[in-house]
Amino acid sequence: MSGIKNEVLVVLEEGVENKKEFEGFILKEGFNAIENEPFAYTGVSTTPYFNTTAYIFEIFSKAFEKVGVNECKLICQIGSHPPTAYLYKKDEFFTELES
Image (cartoon, rainbow, N blue to C red):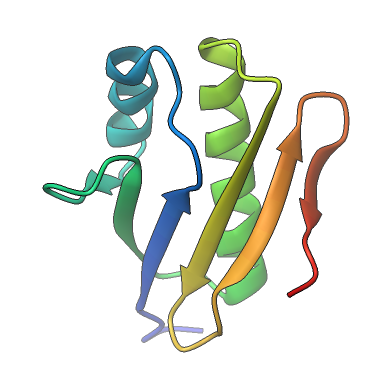
């Protein structure tokens, strides 16, 4: 699957209290903060859609755990796929929200 290159966008509906620690972890894992957009992040993926989605879930769930977030809504867009909304709950992981 060479040649895959997808832009990734992840936006949190609400912020987290400890933004510095949260973003420190997110940025270390390859995401970039969007200037003047609180809790919006971009990145580039060279893996297939489902692998990229799994990676996003893994990284953001670890970041949420680090700062004590029990629940958070986020929107994720990978490449040309439509944006998808998810609800993270600490004990349930991520659930896709119906549009």
